[in-house]
Amino acid sequence: MEFLGHFRRLTSVQRNTFIACFLGWALDAFDFFILIFCVSALATQFQAKVSAISEAIFLTLAMRPVGAFLFGLMADRFGRRPTLMVDIIAYSVFELASAFAPSLKIFLIMRAFFGIAMGGEWGVGAALAFETLPAEGRGFFSGLLQEGYVVGYFMAALVYGTLFPIFGWRGMFVIGALPAFLVIYIRTKVDESPAWLQGRVSREAGSHLGKDIFSHAGIFLFLVVLMFTFNSFSHGTQDLYPTFLQKNLQFTPKTVSFIAIVYNIGALLGGILFGTWSERIGRRRAIVIAALLAIPVIPLWAYSHSVPMLALGGFLMQFMVQGAWGVIPAHLNELSPPAVRGTLPGFAYQLGNLLSSRNSVIQAKLVEGRYGGSFAPVLAWTVLLVASLVAIVTWSGSERRGADLSNTK
Image 1 (cartoon, rainbow, N blue to C red):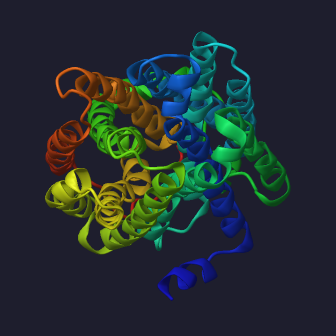
Image 2 (spheres, helix red, strand yellow; image 1 turned 180 degrees about the horizontal axis):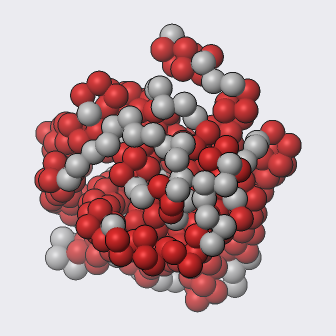
């Protein structure tokens, strides 16, 4: 009922804007997560190790700061709405190009370009959403918006379980080009950010970006470190988990898809719950609680052997991981300097991604080397370490819950 209440209070313009930003992020994530379900198939196709295919995940994540910077500048200079449309077309095109890669080298290049486009979506979409939405219920909308990422993962799991046996990995990436049609909805239903239209964003924002970041160097560096811990938390629990289910437990695509769908339902619920809860108990407290509660779930999540127990462990783990993440869109936008809100939150987010971008490669190499092919201990130690870091770094910072985001000057 509270969910419906929040939406009823929105105007049609606010509702359409939020839906567009949510879908943009969800479909962006869908295109990314198609890759992680196809790691084993790609390794077979290109006759390579899992760690070699994991380089595609690394390149995607490593190039995201480039996209956050470039598309962020465009958003501050030319507007949130047209930049979001260009970004969605770009990541759809490179997703489609990945489907026709004749070699691993070309595939890796396409994933790097996809990473640039993927990196631009979050910051631009979040700025457009929060500059349009009312301050009331911001925690709820923060949790829901961030969980567009989870919905993308959910859709990738569903498509993999139903269509992969029919179309193979190349077909998965062709399907990943469909988000381009979202541009039609944005073009016809979504308005520009009211704050941007009112002229509060300098049309020369790009020339002041360096000065603005330098004058807020402390908060900028803090956000980068914070997002390093958060990206290590999410990608450390998500990127190789389907491969763990395939390689160590020999589960079929249908079973892997089922488990992934279950834990993405947990992630969606966790993000909304903790995002909403952060309105009452504060952003930092909500994040710390979610992160620390992930640690007791490790045995069930990494060391179970039956499908029901693994599904339950996955549900609880992603409930906590995305519970912490659900607070982030509001938290970063509230902490960021107003004049570069289209650039700085997304740029800090993706620089954190860059710092954690070799996570899956390191995990894969540890599995292949030190642990003799066993994923469980690597996954377990990852959660113990990064969940603790998320809690420590978050608590060491500040928060500006309920800050006025209508001012962009």
